[in-house]
Length: 263
Image (cartoon, rainbow, N blue to C red; front, top):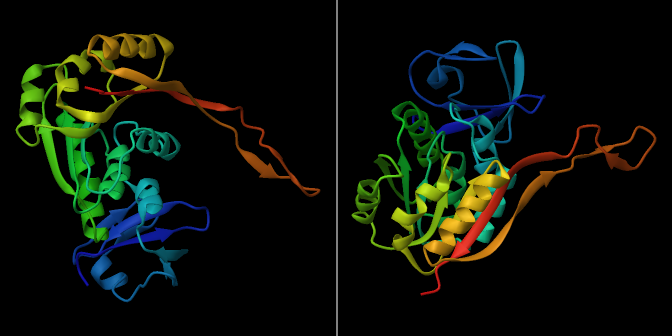
């Protein structure tokens, strides 16, 4: 059926998201194909050959979407997204505001949780980033049965006029995620949109940003509930049996802060 999306997984683990449509497209690593013709009979769970490669056909769940999504701006990684969504306390049906849409890496995680009864509003200043993010949102809406009401606000999150534009969509949000170069500058404009009991998060590459966000949250009357660092330590299977830490160094990605509005 034209319009559906398939995930093609190479043996190496690389994932390609292909929308079934009757036109010739060029897919890096595969070549030129007409999805409507070449993939019309492909079904999830099957192995197929396209050109010189063999692929496992998968349903494009969240894992496949984040691995195969188009990218321009650097995305919040799934390990960080999992912490953010958990610490923000997001659940199905919630109203969530995201400052910093980018390529929609975190957006897909948020949409997957709040579902069709939820509301997801995102703010992005740069048109070239929003274009890629909207492509990924379109793939997800074509793939998932449950996708929230979605709004894009084009504007500067450091400007109160952008907060006014977001408030016209919803006057209260259950959670706000901020992924901007200077997140503390957005907090005074958007913290007022938090519902009581709602939480706000800041994603900070360096400690000086974390400190500035902490101070801005306290000045806005929010209580900082948690602040910390995200680090990965990958383990591998040893050649003589057992498992051991991998040779790659422990990987830092970001400092994260979560604050609650109590009144």
